[in-house]
Image (cartoon, rainbow over all chains, first blue to last red; front, side):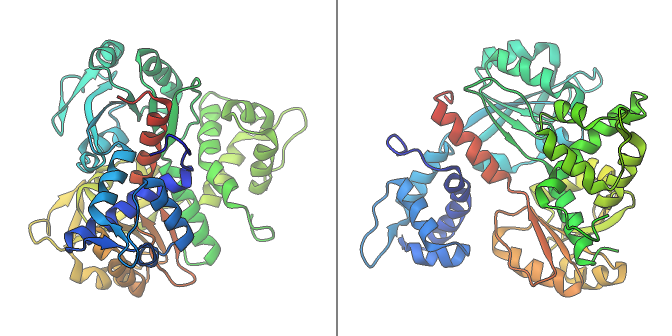
Length: 213
Length: 213
């Protein structure tokens, strides 16, 4: 559906939330859903909702709205969530453990197939059924399993070298949970989730409103 | 330090990463650090780094740079990370468990003092030494402990009502891990961490580069 017009990233960011609402309507037995209702539920500008729905390529029916199941299928396919994508995780520290233990990634089509750490005490352990391997085996295993997504939860000082090794082994999408801006070659994409920055803004805004003790 | 000029949020977002680098320099024995070196290490525009350092109120020394320990102290105080701030968490599902188990919040001055869930099977359990209480006790405990930060990890359909209850009990800062845009009154701040949106963008960009299988 994005062959002709590339879809803007803000539109892509809105799709998971729209998908969730559409799935709730389907669960409630609704066959069709209107863009104006969706906009109201999502507290979004109706123009932005119509733009996102247009990106799915699904055609609305006058007076009825968009066929809900068709919308769901189209968004799932667009996001690649209609099939499982394998990922590896490097760095089984606090954040790594939390992500390995998180059971929610399956609904987004993400399956972590292996974890890596340099600590011999962790190697061989399983967290949420995912085995921890030594980092020296990372290249071989990424290549053998043809994994394309790498989750980075290592300490700051080794983040870049770990990502370099991942990319050398075939990783093309990096989910960066470190606070560091990683350097990657063209053709490799990075998304950063920075809890520290998010919390910094929250703490600072709280302090500004005078509400923080 | 922000009494006169409010500091822009993008600057606030940069501070945790700058802090980390400054702490590494201190650990390496450096007494001073220059804004140009910091900019180079952080891959940031030197102008933005100087702006952030100016926000700390610390004065640089010509030819030497900024006194590292003074910078550290000033940033920690600015972010409120020099003392512990209590928080409660509501929703001990997958995401809630992951956050309760995450040991990294202490370094950001955040201490989760209680968790809440409606599931009787979870009530009374401890995760990472944090006790799970029934949701009906939330108001009373938030008030008694005078907690100001609430972490929301409940399912979509109850997110707004949980936040309303939190705010009614005195919560003034909401860390929202649901994909939903929450409605809060003036004076209450919200920061959202949306893993689904981040993963959606990563999946989509991977698909666009043709690297995803």
